[in-house]
Amino acid sequence: QVRLVESGGGLVQAGGSLRLSCAASGRSFGTYAMGWFRQAPGKEREFVASISWSGGSTDFADSVKGRFTISRDNAKNTAYLQMNSLKPEDTAVYYCAARNSVWASSRQYEYDYWGQGTQVTVSS
Image (cartoon, rainbow, N blue to C red):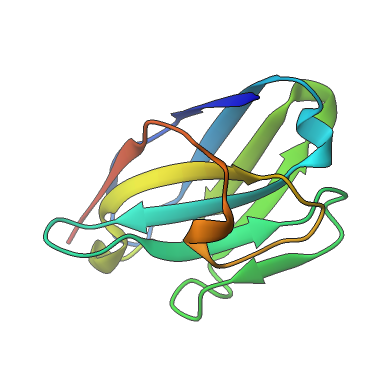
């Protein structure tokens, strides 16, 4: 199985940047597609970004396209979410997820493993 631990969350001003990390442990991390989801207070968890096993294919929610970048470094067993031009609407708990597939996916029910979440707060 895969265990995921997010880090890098915190408080940032609108227009600023933040990079989240997702450290994975367990067997064959490199064979898993990865995704980032977020949940704001009082709202349902929503898709943010995903990346294939090879890193060659990525998907983004329309709300973050052009501002966020997802990447992975399989040698370090780590996935990243680079967040630029942050807006107050980006405030949420961000979750890393892993999927037992090489393909990226925006559907949260297709993911098998989840991290504990890290808080991102964007001030206006």
